[in-house]
Image 1 (cartoon, rainbow, N blue to C red):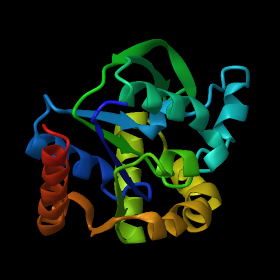
Image 2: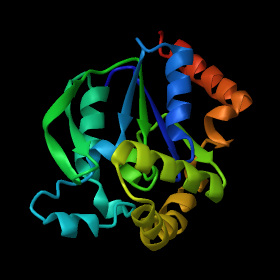
Image 3: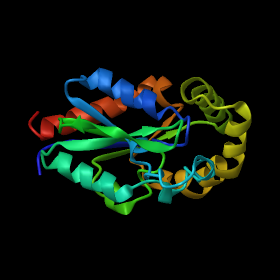
Length: 209
């Protein structure tokens, strides 16, 4: 395999994972960093009716095509391009088009359950858990789903109560024990971001970059 650093960033929905990923992108340099989002690997549900799709539990580990994600990560680590799925959150289906992704010096894998799967967890060079209070995460989720995904407040809160919160407690939060670094308050924690950046640069030096 090539000398590529695979960084995993996880935490609950709305914890600030994307902000941490973007900070790393800025600090290390966008020409060296590729970001892969686990959300792109939701399973294809077009065979179900829209009403059935809406009732799916999207916060359970089985909602993701973890095998395809793992295979794609291995391809990238081996220097091969991938065709990453693109997901439509308004219809809960994969788009027909894909996005070609090439290997890079640093690959950032971001998602709520990336540390749940042993096969993915075991190939990560650095495992990061972003730890943010529940109320802050809920506020951020509401804002995102209303503004970006066109959802109603009622549907967001129903989903939070029936699946997001219980799945977080059952599957997401327990993966904190696998993390090498825990970052309270996500991208706003500049000290933690600086420590993470230092560790990445040390690994880059080790790998001859």
